[in-house]
Length: 322
Ligand code: AHR
Image (cartoon, rainbow, N blue to C red; front, side):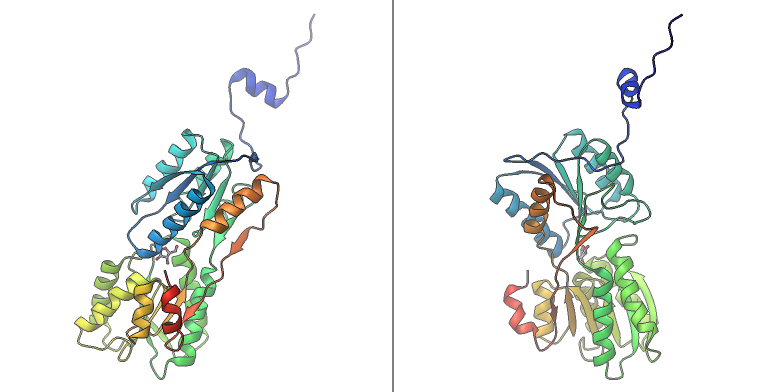
C-alpha cells in the first residue's frame, strides 16, 4: 500500500489555492521607477495640502507614478482606498492613517499581498501593528514632544495665565492622543495650572471656532487656549474676538503646525507660540523607499526635526513657513 505523501505548508497552499499570510515584510525590487500609492486622510487644511504637494513633487522629480487617494476625512473611505491600491498592485503604499486603530487590518492585508507599507505622519496603535513586521517604518514628528514643548513654553511665559481650554484633534488620531499626553503630563506637574475643559475640534478651523465659543462661554475665567493644530487655533482666535476679548493678550493662544497664516498671527501677536510639525515628507519618504529596496534596515521611527515660532523668532521664520 502506498504511503500518503507529506506536503509542506506552501505546497499545500498551492494545491488548495489558499493564500498563506506572510509574517515578514515583503521585499521590494530595485527598479528604475515605481508605482507608489499615497493614501491621504483629507485635504481640508494647509498642512495636508503641503504634505500632498511634497509627495507629488518628489514623485514627479524621480519619474515615479503616484497613485493618490484622498479619504476626505472618512476613515472608512481610507480603508477602501488602501484596499483599492492593493487590488491595483502598486509597488509600495505610503499611508497617513487617519485613526490609529481602524487602519491596522489593511496594513496587514497589504503586507500579506506582498506590498510594503511606509507610515507617514500618523501612526498605528503599536499593540495592533508593528514596525519591521507589518510595516517598514513610521516617518513623522514626535507628537508627544510637540505637546511637551507647548506646555514648557507656557510654564515659562504664562505670567499668571493658568486657566486652560484644550482643543483636541480628531478623536483616535495619533497626533491628538500624543499632543494631549505630552501637554497634559507637563501641566499635571505644575499645580498652578488647571485644564478647565478639553474637547475635540477635529483639527478643523470652523469646528475649533464653534467649540472654543461654547467653552469660552462655559468658562469665562479661561485665559489660555491650547489647540492641537493651527486650524483650530485660528478658529479660536475668531471665537475670542467674538467674545470681545483680545487674542494673544487677554487669552494666550498656543498651537502646533507652523503654517504661514498661523506664523503671521504670531508676528501680529494674536497667537503666542507655535511648535512646527513639518509636512514636507516627500524627500525622506522616497529616500526610505529606495533604501528599503536596497536592503537598508530602518528603525521603528524616523523622526522629523521641527522648529518653533515665538514672538521673537516668528518674523524671521515667516518666509520659510509652508
Ligand atoms: O497629523 C498631523 C496633523 O494632521 C496636523 O497637525 C494637522 O493639521 C493635520 O490635519
